[in-house]
Image (tube, rainbow, N blue to C red; front, side):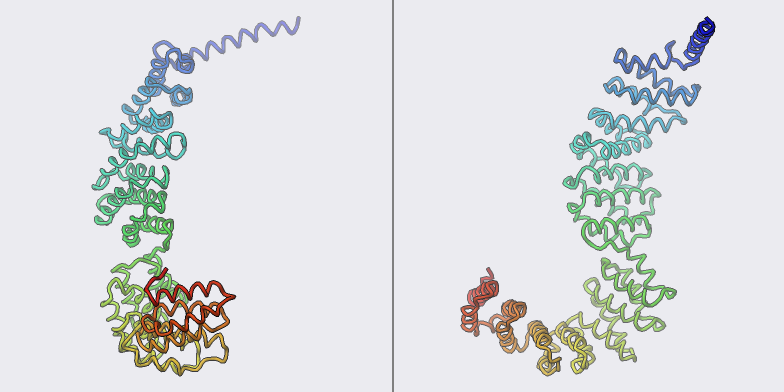
Length: 511
């Protein structure tokens, strides 16, 4: 009886407390939040219930906790039909200043709900309000990233996405929206490359205006580059604009361009950053040399070449730095051959340091026949006792070509080590050089034949390959080649190679 004495009062207390809670719960049109939530969840009256929940969210007089709860009940009910979508669009299109977060959340929910929700979100990209367009672009990007089942549907809307992207070619203050929209293409698959031309066009416009006409250009550029990065190998057409963007002032754009180049299978170097190290007198010469070598991976650029020439012409720079700079400049000769040749040539002729003069001469040799003045300097190394210096001199003179042909006969007088391997390796170097210099080809043919008679399969194979470059002189030894081929039994690959070489020499048929 003592226990029962407490049960009734406790029960009465709980009933009163529940009644008080229900009376304190936020309501709309005479019905509580819980009531509207149940009507939505059960499907009894989803349209009116959804609108009621939106009204509770939009009423700034309600407690923030009640508004958040209403939003959660609306978006977590799992009821997605046109009436619920219309309610969400009310929240999206008519927010007050303190409801911008709900506007964004509602747009994301709409885009993630279903295919119909995606379509409604895409239609918001045409809305007059730029913030709504931004919310829609962000929502589509997130939906394509997190909803695999909706990604396929978004892929069917590529023409719509491209149409909206075109708007961002012109300067505007919607770079963030453009960035989100562009990054949809980084998600929907590497095979979907239809947007690449439009992405390139946007980046070209940004590059022309130096990403300075709009504070949002960097966001837009980074988004477009990330899209190219995501598309991958099918975005090869973007390489030229990525090369240009490596040198743009905005560091975020340059960094992203480097990453995209790397994803396309080329160097991910950031040349502006590496150049800073290469030209800094505060950096150790050893590290500067590494930076100068690294710059060879960068695409050619007028400003880069001008900065390198400044280093080359600075007499106060360490000699090894100037030498390395000349080598890097020679690597870019195809960009501005006259300017680079003249800069290196001038330094070579004015330099009193013999070591530097020699290094500059070797850099100049890559320019071919115009490097005549480098020949006497390089030729001195033909008499060196160092095997590597001899090799380098032969190859450099071969690069210069016919102007150095008068030295070709000296190649055979260069002493080499007693090792048979070294002599055969030197012979191959000489043959290749004679082919480049277009001289002493008959001698080269005989050297190829001697290689074919070697037991070393690698040298024999190289002899057969080099003979193809000595037509028509090699036609005179076709019969001898046939004899060698007939006697070649153990090395089947060499036999086949010889037979192909004979066919090529006789009929010009490489196959």
